[in-house]
Image (cartoon, rainbow, N blue to C red; front, side):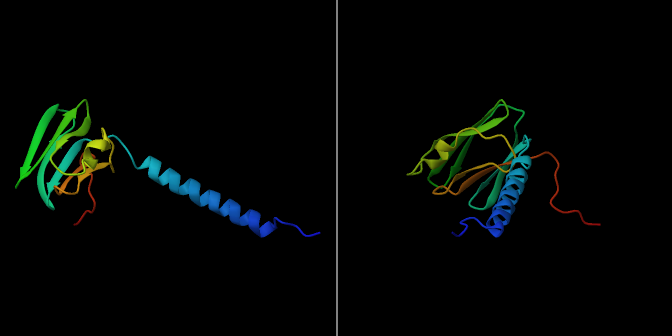
Length: 122
């Protein structure tokens, strides 16, 4: 009779579990509470808004209209005149690495931390 599971199969399984756990750890620890919402329209910076101040922002770009609110440290898209309305289904976001994208209207809202830098030059 032959063995179905070999030692190499067990080693491969353990390696895959370790890689999966490492990827989960990296993705879970990178999300921290954001400090600001950075909005771009058609690839250009539209504005930066603090998550600490409750406000409503309306974006008008050509015939496109998007409206989002910042309340209690969360950002939520509440109106878009695009055809598919996927951006409205994203719900509330507040952590870094989260974003709301309205592809037809070319609006992107990204959550960022405080004074983080991508690179430092001397």
